[in-house]
Image (cartoon, protein in one colour):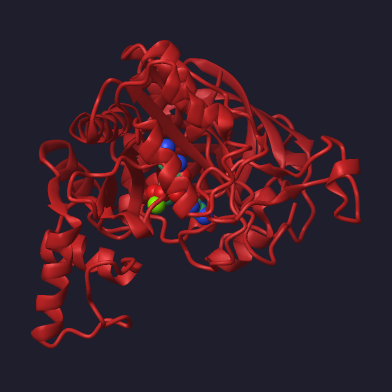
Length: 454
Ligand code: 4AD
Ligand code: MG
């Protein structure tokens, strides 16, 4: 049996014998009674083991250190007047594997920085058990949402020729030390994917609705709490819909994920609420029941200019149409002004990628970013330019290599009517639903500038 199961059925097991394996979280040896707090990883909950000197295996078990693995045989005893609803009174205890004395995770509080240096052990703490179980549940919920809605899951290639976002932030894949790409493995320059979107667009033309969920690599040297060099992105792409339809998918998907974790992961959510972000559950409850606000980029510029006039000081205080919004501006809009998740739409074309649909005003594109309090940009997406000539023109203006993107651009020649999609940064979502404040704490083994441990 495992601890998760026992917590589900302990009432039926009153005074009955159970047997299980687990890791010692703490061990208090008393004169008459001793206590072991046991965790076997199947649930956040710990099992309380009580034993006396007459237990079989007493001599050996007395020496069991924190993190040792033991086998427990014992009786389930209900303890209605104690914090935990039941405990196990051991009849036999076997020390299966002893841990060393200076196990790095002792009972005291550890800093997140220290814990990142022992990422191979930190998943054993309650904080990281909560975060990574929620991460796993959210991934499942996302797949379930798309599968239920008839989307086809596309595993887009990890090694690519193009830099989809055109931002020049890709890692080069090479087997050589001399930059001679003609002689290299692929006979040309290759890099790790910064986005699966372009491939997803081709699948959307075949299946109508498709999505990717895969690793994404960006060599942007931004050492922030929200950027990683290796992160996971979900990129749905849907044919025959416009920006409004796209926005609806974003909102529906996020609500689905939140509902899912409310139904399946209350232990973890409660732990995160108590330990990572006070009010987390209330915040997520509100999301389930609210409609997100929608503003245009121009409206955001107006609001920010007004804030500056009223004396608010941003680091970038020169607010004007055409500027790229910094995270301070994004946070101001969703945290101070709207106080809720906010879709910002119709950005100036100069600050967005080449593939976005140009609006009739000649200045903006049909882009959408979803900004959420505490995180800033959670989602970035757009309707795609479906007009071949306009797309080619934009590529030329932006110095995009149209030769290596020929296959992508040509999609417009073979029947292509409206397509829209978005990219959800999975780690940012996990930060949002756990209250973790640093992306390094929601990635099992984070990769960030000057940091490649494990
Ligand atoms: O806004 P981005 O760059 O959009 C795209 O890549 C499009 N191709 C998406 C699409 O339309 N299919 O990235 C999408 C999201 C961001 O909103 C952010 O949440 C996340 O990916 N993201 C990162 N997350 C962690 N670390 C980084 N370095 C990230 N860069 C982007
Ligand atoms: Mg973006």
